[in-house]
Each structure stands twice: as C-alpha cells, then as structure tokens.
Length: 340
Image (cartoon, rainbow, N blue to C red; front, side, top):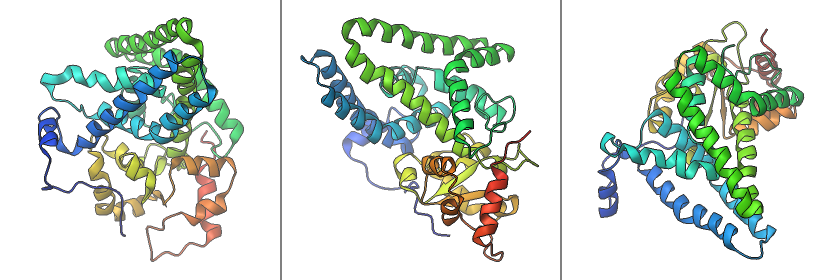
C-alpha cells in the first residue's frame, strides 16, 4: 500500500540558521515546530495586538483575524501542542522554553495553558476511551447529532470539575495544581482584558476558546467513533486511522490515531512506517482505516448519517476478502452503536 503521508528523510542539508536552532531542541525531526512557532509569533500575536489598539474597531478585520488564525493555523498548532506534550521540544537545560507553546501561543488558539496536558496525558491516554475516560465516546450513539451535543456540552460545562475530581481521586496533586494554575490564570487574564477592549478580547480569546473546545471534541468523537463492543479496550478496535490526507501533511500525521494509542511516545514521523510495517496486524485485529479524509470530515458524515460516503473511503486491509458496499456500511453502523 502506497503511503504519501510525511516521514523524515535523514541526511538532508541544513542552513546555518537551522543548525543553530537544532542546538536547542531534543530531536531534529521537530524542526518544523520551530518554523511554526516563528510564523505564529510574528503574525498571530501582532495581528491580535492590532485589534486591541486600532481605532475604530472594524468587525471585518476581526473576521479576517479569526479566519487566518483558526482556519489556517488552528489544526497545526493544536497538533504541535499535542506532540510537544508527549515529547518535550526543547532540551532540559532550556526547559523554560517549553512553556512558550502552551502559555504564550496557546491562549490565542483557545487552549488554556496546561489543560491540554492534564486532560490528554494525565487522563485520556491512561483511560484509553473506556468508562473512566472523561472524554469517552462509549456511552453515546456516535452517529447522533443530539448525542454529540450532549457529549460536547458535558465537556464544556463540567469538564473542569470532572477533570479536577479525577486527578484528585488518582492522587495526582501536582498535575491538578498545574491544571488549575493554567485554567484559572486564563479566565482571570481574559476577564481583565475585557475591561481594556471587550470586542478584541471576544475575537482573540473568547470565541477561539469556544470554537477550539468544540473542534477538539468533534475530533475526539471521530477518532473513537468506531468501537468494537466486544473489545472496547483494544486500541485497534476503539480508534481509527486516516491515511494519505492533506490533514496529515498539515497536522503532523495526527490521522494515525491507532498507532498513537499503541505507542503514545512514538515520533510523529514514524507513524506511517509503523502502519505499513504492521498492516497485517491491523487487518487481523479488525482495525478501521479511511483514506483521503480526516476526522472532521468523518464527524460531519456521521452527523449526516452518510455511511454510503464513508464506505467510499473505507480501506480494505485484506484484499483477499472482498466486502460489498452494503457489508462495509453494516460494519460501520455496528461499530458506532452505543456501548452499554
């Protein structure tokens, strides 16, 4: 199977600037993160500052800011945050720089500092979408728009309380205080900025906060939409993989969600190779794989109940076993049913 998603090519020449930057980071394969940080630092932040100081305030300029920041860069930023949460970007002696992504850039993309790390690393991966996972999709009918909004509103309004309770129960006090520090610092900071310029604060921080949490839950919903009720703890059967997508090229191979749950610290450039190497295992385990579409398209198709369209992008991992379109649809419907 031909895979077109990005992998690392060793031995390529670096510029003098790149060689200087490589001294600061743990892994040369993460150099794209520094490029992305530079782009966001020199575009997003000045644009946001402009919204605060420009008089009069133009809503059409604010709309351009939101489109630029969220349509173009939200996905790459969140997946950079994801990868650097699993694997520290900067070397230990420069550890203070590891706060730059979650604390400086994060709020501009609706990410409260430390909350992503506490939820994703501290809770989601250990619980693996099972019942103790606060973002588990098991109890929901995963092609139901009503159930999705129940899922989203529960996370949006009760997420802080539930994660706090979880971390307290697990006796992870250090992570709990880290979570509180980031979450409530953001709320205080944004409240104060509302007295400076409420219009700019609405566009720069508040709307992205709501939008990002919606998009993250839509993404997680799709990532864990197709669960085998007979084996919900099996990563091959409670997650999916998306291959050969523009999303993977822009968002650091995030489509390889099965491989990521199997090996959470595996570098993002290795995930396509892991899939190719173990494709027979994926087939034997009944993994669901799609091609050329991403999690958000899958979420939308599920909300529309367009299983016929989903079937078009389904990857048959066992060419010797021919499945009809109807059989694929039946399989997908079975895997989206509520697990009780």
